Length: 192
Image (cartoon, rainbow, N blue to C red; front, side):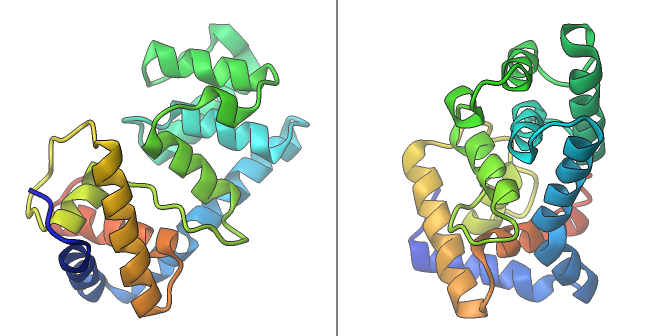
């Protein structure tokens, strides 16, 4: 059950205060590191970073980061013959983006579009927050892994607002705070 934005902000800050120094450092750098990894692939295969980030975002649902990057490289190298660890529909979106379609014309869903935005804006600023089931659990104060797969538009906007409020109070970018608490949640609940 969702609570108020202020209550969710307090829950988010509680996870932040449970984070280790390493989680803080890694969380603050997470999206910039993701951008750098996408930039490496873009340079290696003469593609735009935007295209590679789009491919990565398309392949991201229920995919571990390391596998996500290797799947993206397989899409770039092998096209439709690539074997990836995600849903067929996500592979098809990645192929469309690889073929030159604008990522935001192909990507659907709040989480996937936000993931794209957070990576592509990692060296700038965005108020976008990537809310997955772990981020949902952090904001709502759930102590264990949440099975919630579909977060309504209203809940997504509310949780994003809570992350922005908490980030502002902590002097962080919203996506940095989300990454820090995501890492902390995974450690505390042994979810990897």
